[in-house]
Image (cartoon, rainbow, N blue to C red; front, side, top):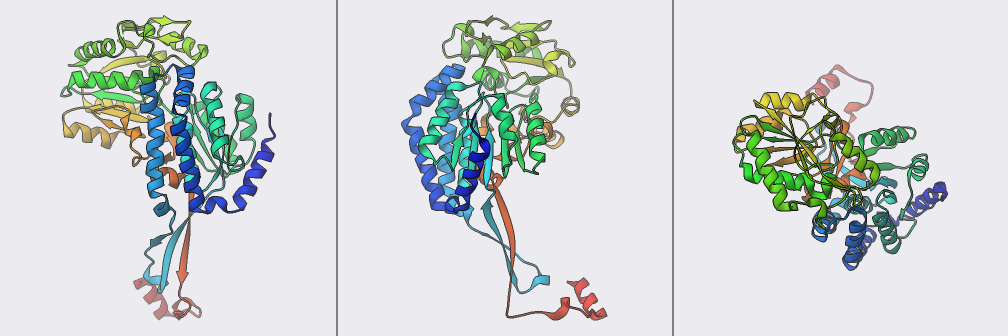
Length: 455
């Protein structure tokens, strides 16, 4: 295992040269990264196929394409983002002007997960580099093919003292967290997020935590059930349900619950065939540990559709559950797999109370034709982000910050929010040296106090 203190020392020395503060240097690096991704598109798709059995379309739609969109969006705006921002001063400081100067934090640690190993590594790297930071990048050991590709990509695009990839497992993670950074971005489970935050607290290091949780999907009696079923099924079972913002459970109005289950069953067969485990384009569970965990969640549940598996290929069929108890194991943790419980509610306030009784989710989805229902849930439920009448696609919009709230995370990134996440805005007041109003200086008078109060 390498000496991480030496890696950090070299990155701090590189940062101290001031190269990364030059916007032209950042632009050159990001353009080089874009060229590399385009030139090695097939290698990226092959790595994702190896790790998760993702089909090329899904890999491009949910990983490579999003990264390229992020690069285009950032390159077009980085010069504007990097300029000092003028802020109005106040009368008490007349004459003066105020500016916010964006500056990079320094050396960032980026720890990424296995479920979307390319996009959830490359996107924060883009944000960190665009803001002018150096970065130590730690991909997940659970996706070794993509981890190896990311190490190769960064070695060929960046100076290793600017951006470097550390491969390995838990031992490397723990050793990395023993070091001091200027900012940490972690994407993964809530439990590991607590460990990261605890390690960061030793050095008072700011953290961006992108975690997860049980994201609800509400379907009311006015929704277009056929369309809702197709979009829910797509959002849930893409990447075999191993998506942090996937609908974790459905809350369907009691009057349409059975019909929705029927429509979702039809949609699953339409999208994934009658034998999904034999479908070569259907992704697999990342490893045997998670496969066995998911199988355990099915025990004792009422399976409407699916439930079958192929242990040799680590595939589990898209599975719908009915008659699920709120205190059952499948409702006690984020599922993170192709299992979808469907529960009932009778009124919006009941649904909101059921959701709010649990930790704040990373995402929420509402299917309705009523504006008042839409407004009710947006006003009464706290969540990271989401969609009305669709699922998960809000992540594909660079202008929308992505992040959680409460136990589902803190901080956000994507687009300008990503630049801001890795930037400290230095606030500076510029005071005139030609005029100096004596009001603030002693000895103080009653007149001066009255005037100050009026100001």
